[in-house]
Length: 336
Image (tube, rainbow, N blue to C red; front, side):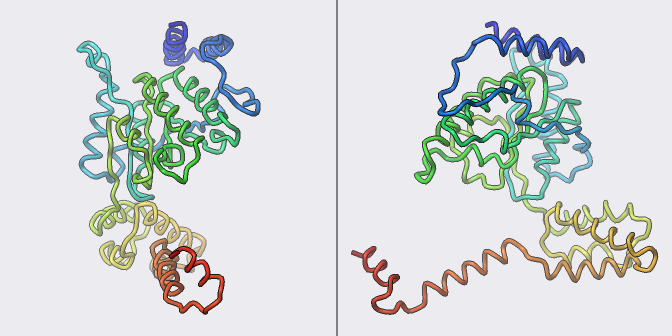
């Protein structure tokens, strides 16, 4: 009771910009032994949980993003629920505040989370796994506890990128018992978060997440890779702001780029402008564009590397194994 009341007071004071008073309340609360210390083989050190997050000033706007229709509509609904939370609470409902984003990298998951923070005018906290995951027994859970205790003190958007790093499937036999305890503790903390803390988790590998993790999130949004038409629209938005338009149309540029994520298309356009700017008038926009398109066709892509690895694996599997070799003995042992 003491903890929840104090947390509510801290959140209210921070919302009023009374940060000094809120910090005093937080220090007072941390001095009260409301929860037992975590079991660990090493001292977990001090800290308030603030060291496990990076606060970013949100700049991205949801209206500026190219989003699939379900994502755009759900994002609009999420913002409305929090802006008009008092209306929902008058009818016994809380705004949804746990959102899971999944899809290949570079297609807007992080930008969406930042856009939600910007629309709600809330601090945008990005979790630092290097400061969160410890090597000692119980250390990660202790740091997680401090992190969640800190974010409860004020309305905010808490963003977990690469969420599969701590939300892995507990049934995986290759994982240690420690990560299973971390997942169980994480799920408990997510359940106990107040609705004024919006938790957004993103993953490129949804298949790795624990099944119970999916149930904890009230919104589950997919961010698929863009098709050719969406890439054309994205390129047109960027190129239309250039001081000089290239002769090559966005349709032909998109066709030459073939498959690309939004992040890759943005990097490509920025590289063209860098080359053009550093040319100091000697490298026109068309020359810069042509050079970057040549480099684009020669770039290393993950799917190409995966295909080469598969071919190498298949070639090794088809090689005849000499009698008496270590590989032959290992294969005979497995068969036996």
